[in-house]
Length: 302
Image 1: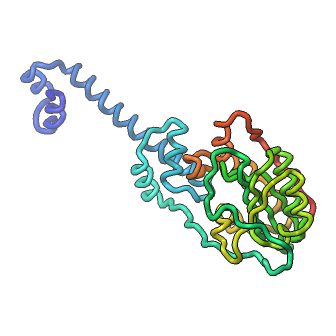
Image 2: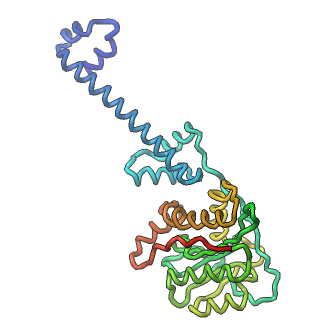
Image 3: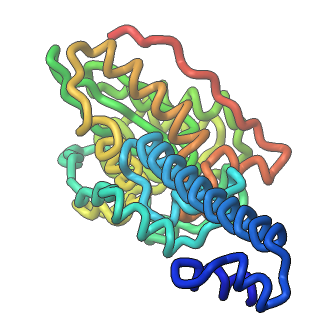
């Protein structure tokens, strides 16, 4: 308290005289002053480092992370600051997460193929991996024309366990995604495989592939994207974070970039709120018996 008093009145009175009156040493006062200035400098440097990390994590997420996910990244890297402070810093830095896109219905279910009963009824909670897989297809524009992505997610971790990209929408595309998922995960009998009513998933070839590893088929109701909301959400995330931010000159470039996004970022690094803000691979590492690492597919020809 005495040293603080001297600092407060040093412009009005002599430091030497105040030290004498208060019976403190001048060296003690100046040592206190140096320590205080050092503490202030350290706090300023810490805040600066936190801001730098916020900027880094924001752009590593392609501008999609808000304060909750960035706060998790900071804590994971040894920076202890409140989520409220992270939000304030982001506001001051002009960093704002990109809002989600609405659902878009893309499936043509006007065909005469048999369909499966809807077994999920919008219940997307699972307790173990390889209990429920959900799948769908989407399209991406390049300067050379459209390419089509089929992806399969495990609802346990929201990990993309199989995918394939081509320049057509034939049944071969989801079939190759299914083969990748089966080879990687080796699911047991009774896995529920949920899709929309698209002709590819209702085809004889696809149904035969499901029977081969004794999966149970399930399909959404006609024209209801919320029955397959997790697949729709993944595609919305992919487009928001990657596709809408780039212009692909070639199909090969788009395929290579999407392969990287799924393998290296989405599965391995992107924090998911349903996983307690862990990435799909991080979440699954809590289950040691799961085969986690899918190799990045080689550049597919189209």
